[in-house]
Image 1: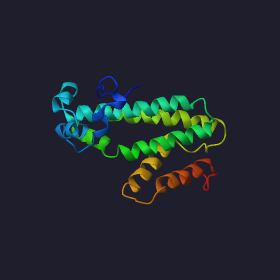
Image 2: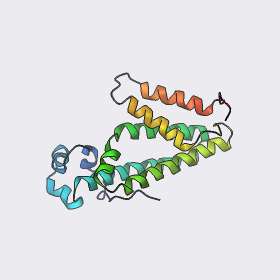
Image 3: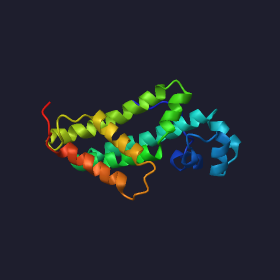
Image 4: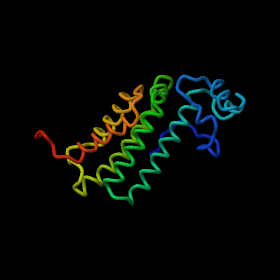
Length: 181
């Protein structure tokens, strides 16, 4: 399953406008920041929502490729590395998903969430099968924790705080449950 929402032009990871796309910026502003003419963007994207959707989809597909590569790694290391990458993704793209849901029907947002949930589910299941991750933890739990860390540290100037909080969450994932279900 892929996120829907358009494609970036060839060479998309290095497209200058992909780096400059932010939820509140107009296409003209994104073009100005990227040093390209507005016509260049309008040829590829009819509106800001189409550009943001394509950028977000590309970034999520990058997370997907990383998850696939990590399947050959140690299960715990793979889960930790992917959650670290997802934390960076959640912090960098904060607001982009919300902006898309507000501007469009929201179907691509649900597709993207499903894709991310599937990635986390696969990596967590491997750690659980190896007996190193708690059986009562779900991928949805992990995503909520990481998104919570991203949101709560958005304005935090303390270096390393998001990573420290993720380490705490991972300790809980690998720890013994304190309460009985």
